[in-house]
View (spheres, rainbow, N blue to C red):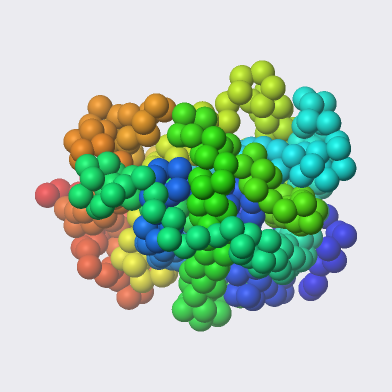
Length: 511
């Protein structure tokens, strides 16, 4: 059954019926690429220059971070086609039917943060371009109107749901890409690939902290999609080859080299022609871009801001509404989307006009990603050890307010996955080093280099596999072929029952 784009989507986190799962890997590519092919990504692309790197050094950091992030993200696309639901619900298999709220919480925080960043950056670019193009005043009222228009359009698209969002991103992928390519002609005369940056050589003690920091900022962009990639891939049929689904997710991030390099190249021009805009104490990439842009490119910049803000905002807010409806099941997806959308809009206005939280939100988003990456490791390794086998009915126990099933573990909590996530994320935060914003107690151990993400990823992988080996999960969670790489126990699995009759907890396996 095909759903019209003008028909409001009623599907929540329950398994999508096979008849409705008509999306293709290409559609996943369009949504993931469209959500990142935006002005907000250009802002992230400018960071290597802000950190003092040369153009070529910045390009190397960008490619390194993007490839690493895309490889980390790609497995997150497999849960949607396999289980027909979002990734938070799928995480019930590894964190327990109650522990899956961790994924919902991470998705909520990530979406609100990136939705806010998108609206702020795109709104500022739109108003600035309109001021240069048509003399529109740059006042709080003008900015407020721009933010309200952006947020309202995003909310409307999200309420209509997946099909409408897919149409928006189909248009956004082509239109934004064309406008970025047009930008190559706009700035070709001023661009110098030999821009040297601030470091005489890589032996400078600040070079490697800057290089790694730039790569991690780029890596954060694909990682930010991890918690809600399944929101879109759940519409892909279960029999779709896994390599095609993962390939779509991977290539969608690699394609974002377009906005990243746009941001990198234009930032190097700003550093040469309008250096005050790249002052590390108060960087203003949007203002610098408008200052160096030729007059005829102001309108394309406004269009990039409008299209990109709409695309990023919808991919973020749609997943948020879906996740909230999965936790508070008395609310439908549409009701949850309206509720979270209203809160996000209020957050945007308070942050912009009352508290001036732009820098704090950037820090907030970085810390969220530091916490999300270990969760993604648990999910990916869980998929491998389970051989991709899941009981889709048992995944829905929480949503139906039932108890028991394969993923009940200890009162609905799987302490193996939960403790892995909690310990790894906590240790990673200790190594965080964001100068002037947030520096963890161990943040300076690597000579000022932020190694929080690599530490979190490595610790999560070792700890999770170790716990699965020492404290094996029930054999029933692995399906007919049994576990891969780890052991299983013969602990019985309680049947699925109504919520008023709680099954017995899983006993802890003996060493």
